[in-house]
Length: 125
Image 1 (cartoon, helix red, strand yellow):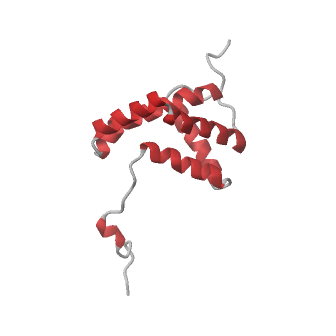
Image 2 (cartoon, one colour):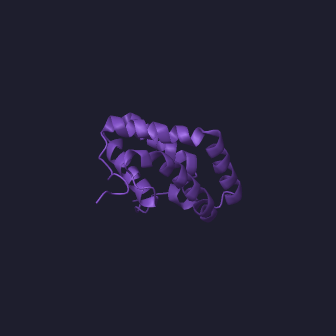
Image 3 (cartoon, rainbow, N blue to C red):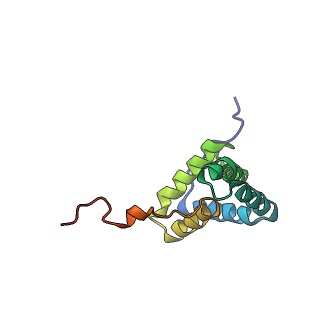
């Protein structure tokens, strides 16, 4: 039986870097940038709404790129791609930098709560 799509082939670090660059470029395409902006506007900086509006758009943009590289065209494919990229981050500073850039496109900056700036749960003596 012929499979509907090819199984995900493990990508080398260089291939992963090329796909990651293509994903980042896709977020910069005018139609995708507009979709992301509309989703951000709908989310109004609310974390719950970010998950509701922004994450599905970001996932779709990534799916549109990575499906050509054997990843399934669904959320699971995006998760597998993310895990692959994560596995290369410690080996390749450029991949780590690109991964951070990608995440910054659809994840709000994380700020520590005011009480997190203290001793970090460690008793000071």
